[in-house]
Amino acid sequence: MPNNGQKITTKGCGLKSGESEALTDRSIHNFYGKRFYVILSRMRIHHYTAIFQKEPEGGYTVIVPALKGCVTYGETIEKAQEAAQEAIESYLGSLAKDGESPPADVSFVSTIDISDHTHLPATYA
Image (tube, rainbow, N blue to C red; front, side, top):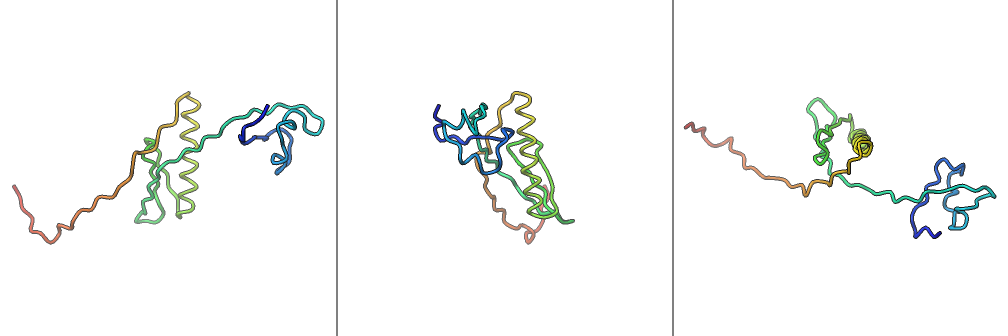
């Protein structure tokens, strides 16, 4: 059965690292004389917008707007990015466990410019 260019996951099949590249459609059924079954699945890549907010006390808070409540923190940009990836994976794993589909990312992200009004006199109504 041809794999149509899908990536073959061989984790747990007793293959050493790098051996998956040697697999062909025929070797899926008979590799080193041992029969095993490989489940072909398409791994979908999800893209999510993450907002990194520098904190006054140091470090970065990361907010993922499309995943309600998905907020994390890291002492450096790199650690914040790793923490965000873990948080997103955990969030999506929880959704999958509950049989829910992952939400789409936010439609777009923009900045809004506000002029500095500190030089204007305060007026009260």
